Length: 204
Image (cartoon, rainbow, N blue to C red; front, side):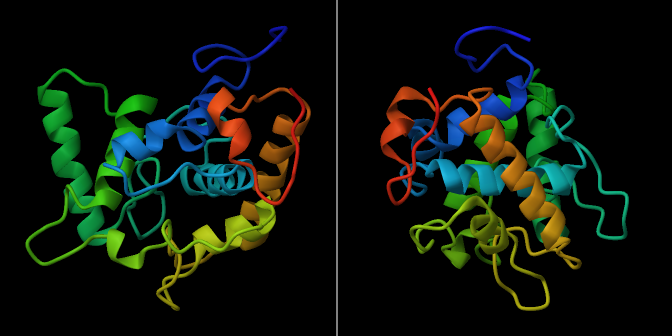
């Protein structure tokens, strides 16, 4: 265990920290060309909980993974269908340029660019059309946020839109990550301390 503040590159939860810092700072806004505003601490923990269930990686160590089920999703967000095709093309381009598609930085950039429409096919928007980031409700706790981001394929709602939501598991993971933040094992970026919802506080 490391002592003191945990930075983006070290510590026992380095990948979770890297993603938390990305979501709760201007980095996500810059990567998405201004489309995605920084998430609150609660929103980020809810999203990370979903990512853990999507990838099956509690510490988000292997992000360029392929789903074991019939959906054959791939990547940190388990892109499927036309979203998987666009992801695969970008992944091959990254490899050709000597970039590791399993890295946090590439996965973060692709996530943001996909939502901003930079990988949309001629047929139309892959996911940005949902406006799930622009229209997200305020004052949600991590469990409610996890449900919001999850949605479902059947109802055509949410960001992840799984065939089987496994919502309780996603909410449990979100609450667990929230606990790490409250306990000081994860840290908000300095600018993210102003992005918390409804007066919540974290341990610094």
